[in-house]
Image (cartoon, rainbow, N blue to C red):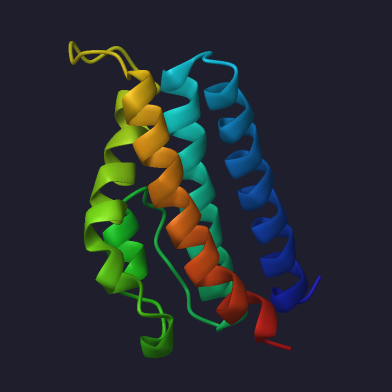
Amino acid sequence: MSETDEARVWLAYAQEDLDAAGHLIEASAAPRIACFLCQQAAEKSIKALLMASGIGFPRTHDLLALALLAPGPAGLARHRDALALLTQWAVLARYPTGEPDASPLNAAEAHHAAALIVEACEPFADRCD
């Protein structure tokens, strides 16, 4: 599979994660899981963009670190606040940490942030052939 084809698969997975999070939010169910799915949607979309651009990336869930690797025109750094908000859910949503559990408001905010990142990555990741 070419890097471009693989990037398209990652984008499809990112969109599925974002859609699933949206369904959980609409159903007022499992805000913690919705937050995690939103983080995953953003991470997969950034990694798709990097793959399609031929840019290697480390194994990390730090979305800002990944975004800083992206080509300049993608402009992901302008979404610094969204990236920071989502990065926290990579751990907080998966493991008991002693922190308060995610609320429906957290899930809605995460969904909005993830949608921004996925939307920003799609044109750049999908255009590379």
